[in-house]
Image (spheres, rainbow, N blue to C red):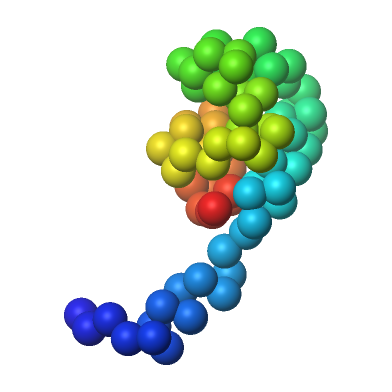
Length: 80
C-alpha cells in the first residue's frame, strides 16, 4: 500500500470530531436505557472513563469499541 496526500484526505474526510463522538456515545447510552454506571459495568471501564468520553475529552478507539459492543452497535459506530 502506498500513502499519498489524496489517500490521507480520503481517509480523514469521514472522521467525526471529538464532540460529535461524545454526543453520539451519550445518545446511544440513553437510547439503550443505560446509566453511566450500567455502561461502565458492562464495558469494564470505570465511570470516569465513560464521563470523559461523553464530555469529549477522551476518544480512545479501544474504549469506543468496547462501548459500541456493549450497546450492540457496529465497531465503527463511534469512529473518531
